[in-house]
Length: 252
Image (tube, rainbow, N blue to C red; front, side):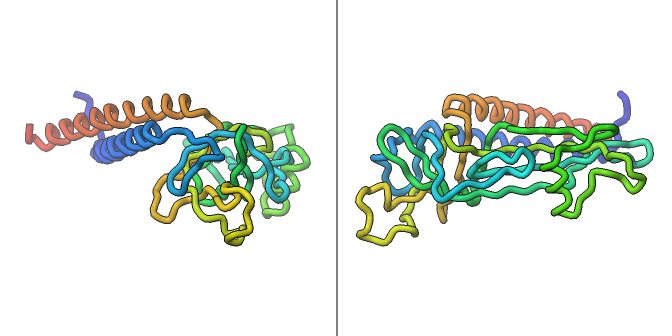
């Protein structure tokens, strides 16, 4: 048998346990989504709800930092390619996000959404790579300047950098699983419709708040594969690492 460094075995054992636990958490989330029916907005009740509809701005919009697109939520990351001796890798040097309240509407009504603390799962909308002979666009240059960052090295040569941007734009279709609660922006008795009294947000005692541009079928399919890979792969990695550790310790 080819000898394996003990550190790798310990990492493999710990990583296997982590994957195994994550697999069960993904399975739990999958079953929760399966057990909650998608509600029409006009008929949602207080508590954990599942809705699907189109984004409508509430009070204005944001501008995404790299592509300058109108949106109600964005997140971004910047990576830099760095070398250290014989090793080199992409390192994340900055991340961030911003969001504002918005409506989701279906064919029955609309309801206010507060994206704060949500698990936002949306596809990448924009990416750009800068490097030798390739400057970033003006919007990215301005963003870097405001944030005291530079795309050039001290020698004046362009660094190898990657910029990723994800956002939720008006008219995007979203799946939302969150907690329907009292709308703090509407005084009691002043609303003309039931949904005006409601805001969907992170629940005080709920550990799930999901916003996704995938529909329920796609989300469940993804969670199925994650749960299977986590539980099965984690178990194999944990048991395999443990067996090798015990063999090395001459306990097997």
